[in-house]
Length: 319
Image (cartoon, rainbow, N blue to C red; front, side, top):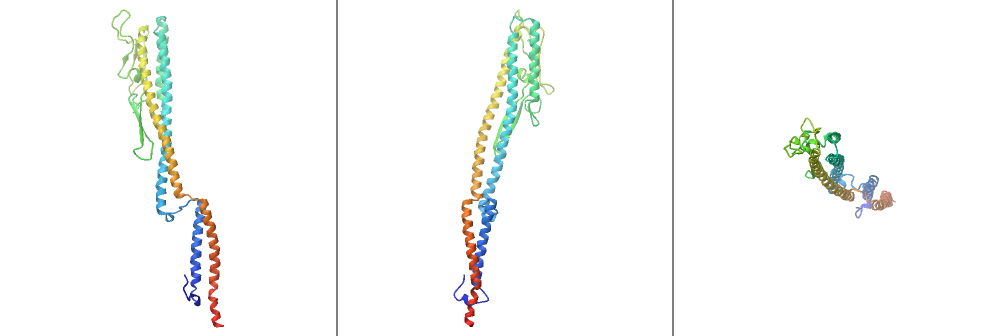
């Protein structure tokens, strides 16, 4: 700032220096304003707002984790949808089995007709095993147990949040003829007594347990009677109950994932909004500031031109 008597000196034009400083400041602020409007960002480098930049970077990192978690939830629901679809198909096969077994339990049929029904039920069991083999997502056989040993459960842990503890775990039990009809080992499913009241092993209808080398199978002897099929009906009912429990477990996990999906969407929106308030340019405010700076640039340029002419006033002392 010029002091008293500065106008009487020629070698140093203090007024010009002050005007140059003011013009440089205006030019710098105008350049920053144009940068903010061209990028749409209020903070383009850390020096613009060090604290705000750090907070916004943390929010950006969290949002990235939340967005990936939302995608993970979608993938998890896809896995469970595939398993549920197979469960529905298997349930349909079991329901058809019950209808056929109920038909065979009627004494109006002969041994030959029951033989046909037994073959059809055995084929339905083979279909259940094949459905389990074809239920695959990525490299996971979803219905063949933990290590494809055809028994036990496949445990899946879904990352549904940006923190390490944000997980949902579900167990998908193996599904095949062995697990549904002979989970405790090879089983005889026919009648335990003969028509005359004598003891019987029930082997006219049997099921083998699932092992690492096979998924188990149903077997119907040509001697299977209506009484054998009536006993077999109880095994089919138990298998249907087992499948109902599996479907229920899938449904509970899907419901939890849907809740997480909604929560994640809301969290992403909130974090993006917070980051936007810190980082994004308010164009209405910035445009008003730019107009003011452009006017100041013109006045500062005019003042500098006048200040540069100031030393000429000393020529009057020499006249």
